Amino acid sequence: MPEWMDLAYTTAGGVVGAAVTNYLSRNQERRQLRAAVMQQLLRVEAVRDRVCDIVPSRRESPSRHFIGARLLATTRFGVTAVLEDGRDAEHAQREAISDLVVAALSAGIPRRVVDFAGGSEVRALQCEVIRVIDLRLGGVLGESLEGLMTQCEEYRQATAQHLLRALWHPWQTRLRMRVRLRVLRQDVAALHRRQEAAMSVLAQPEHIGRLSNQDPQRVNNPGPAA
Image (cartoon, rainbow, N blue to C red; front, side, top):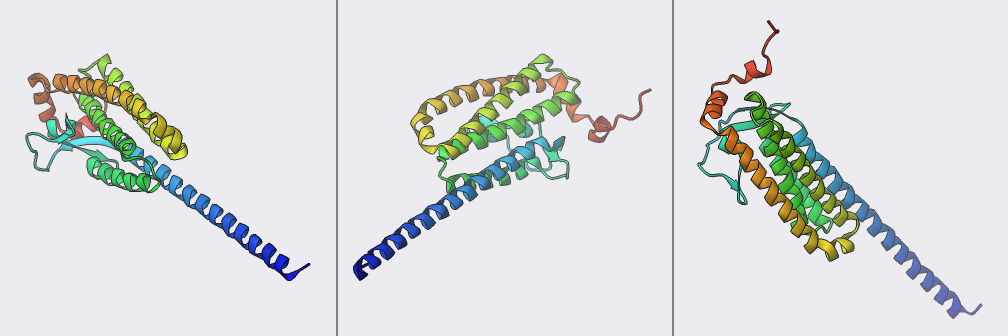
């Protein structure tokens, strides 16, 4: 075989080998980025699941505390949600969401998709605070609380699924993003109204007074039944 043909085969083999190596390297990087997003998403969800109590807030309480256009239940009622290990749930959630944003943007997920996923977790934590407050007050919200929690969980799952679709099927997600985000905006507006209605009931004078007079340890450990 002529030497030039040997050189051609060698060169072609080198080009193909480099292309395959580059392809495998990119695939490995994408897998790592996707794994990081999944890990951070689970971490954010775990914060809400570990909320165990509310205590009187020791932070400065501004008269108005908004994330976007919504008032936080923790600020409205002057409480802090605490985790099983005693940490401030909102602080832990902010740290987890910050890490999720970094991982998701590194994986190429659009910022608007990430914002909806993070915002839904914030709302879910505030709904959990509403649930604990209602429990303290003896269940004054009645069946409406179950409806609120169900609606909140459905919205949270919808935003998480949208994020995962953007992670695994980026081009399909971009084509349908405008429609999906429009639906999510409608869903979050409805959830916001329901949250506001629940907080308005809990904030009535006869309820808010009972909440402020309660001893958290006595509520969590009422002692043996008489």
